[in-house]
Image 1 (cartoon, rainbow, N blue to C red):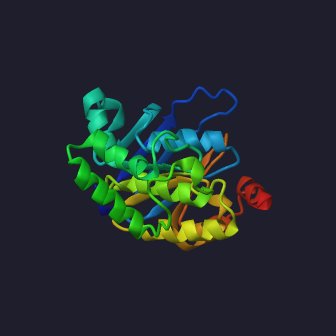
Image 2 (cartoon, rainbow, N blue to C red):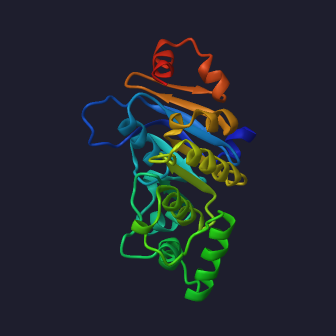
Length: 249
């Protein structure tokens, strides 16, 4: 085993995601996702990309092929082992709502309260410290409906990071954010990719972030998957499907 494989957080080998989506074909994906690196999945169909993202996050098992995360074959995990494994994954979705009946601080605390036996007060202190690092300037007992879109995104990111995950999954993190807010969110996300692997979709909403931080671009269409070493390699590709996608930007 070479060094790159040995230090990879995720290894996909001919993996095809499970999906109820019947409108697309799902070509096999083989790739490696390594620590302190950002990998972005791009392609013409968001729902197709999300199926691959959920598979690489270990949230769904592959329909075919293999996905190994932290040295564990996802398809071989039983329910208890899978639950324990999921504690190592931070999942930040810009499209999934926070719990409307819980205030901001509690939304961030819930993963710790669910997955560990850390006392309530220590959990609250840890959440407050993280929210301070994320530069949150709002009352933490406000409910999600009382916050703007960027403040809700800050809470969602904190909720993903509160378990100190070695793998961070970003599902359209720039969703519903304006240009200035995308820039601020890009700065936050750039800080938290160190010492963990990061995999995302939705990066084409803010290409400047990919230009700065993406070390690997995975292109997925109905007919093929392609791997590129960073944004520059991707935009210079002569593949007609890639160029068609770029022309949409």
